Image 1 (spheres, rainbow, N blue to C red):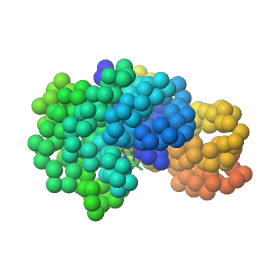
Image 2: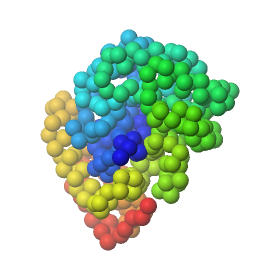
Image 3: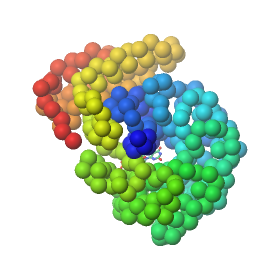
Image 4: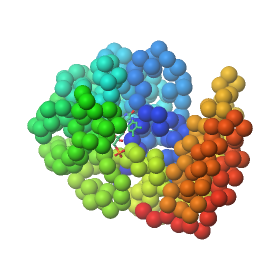
Length: 335
Ligand SMILES: Cc1cc2nc3c(=O)[nH]c(=O)nc-3n(C[C@H](O)[C@H](O)[C@H](O)COP(=O)(O)O)c2cc1C
């Protein structure tokens, strides 16, 4: 079985370690990606906080933002030592701040720099070093430009490419608009797979339905799901059992919620006393449950209840347990 058939996307501000734990409960076979962490943040910031993760997360990929081969090498070693199964370089983020730091999508124009970074990281670690990129940037949007990028970066030793199948527009569109406005071009990704069959290509962008994913999968090695996985987590459970032909029943959202609440309780016991803020102990992990019951009777009440209680100083796990009672346990979810 191809272990890259399903991945969850890196999403800054969303895919923290709690979210990844929830994704693992839902999708036992998926590769889960961290948020992007810049090399500067990892080297000079609170590295233990960024690198902390639950053992059950494995296989998990840590995404780095940077373009300095020395810094990336240091960070790749930190990521490997922390127990992650893959290190991924962000070559797709279009935000102004990321561009200013000479990171993300703007690197697509200098594939030799990306290739050098990959080569240096590969020699420093044993875990796979992979790239997540777009199909182009600005007016560099031809298939040939994209193919040259892949070819050059593969020369640096990259064997796995996650492709967000739309170009990035670096001036004039926000990061959010850059996930919506440039059209999706799955055909570029299908063609690159045909041209480089020995490389692994994971398709990302706009994948929101099981039948759509079944239709794209013969053309690529795997799919990566971002917003739909976060806002409708049960979709991930459905996909995991569909793609891995699991003999088990797809996860039940109530059981998932119970397991996640146990996790929250156990995790809170390990948070150092100086970080015992409501935000750290409760708000951050609890918000990931908001979409869990989407489509079920009572889901809106659950969402409203959890949404209003999570920021209140007195809220705790019992607030979520109370919200769970607003749901109809007989309701079912279909992909
Ligand atoms: C809130 C948010 C934050 C994101 N942060 C990152 C990031 O840190 N690194 C990255 O490579 N992509 C990031 N992305 C892009 C996603 O990984 C993905 O490429 C994009 O959302 C398209 O996939 P989707 O249509 O399945 O959501 C982010 C997307 C969202 C919505």
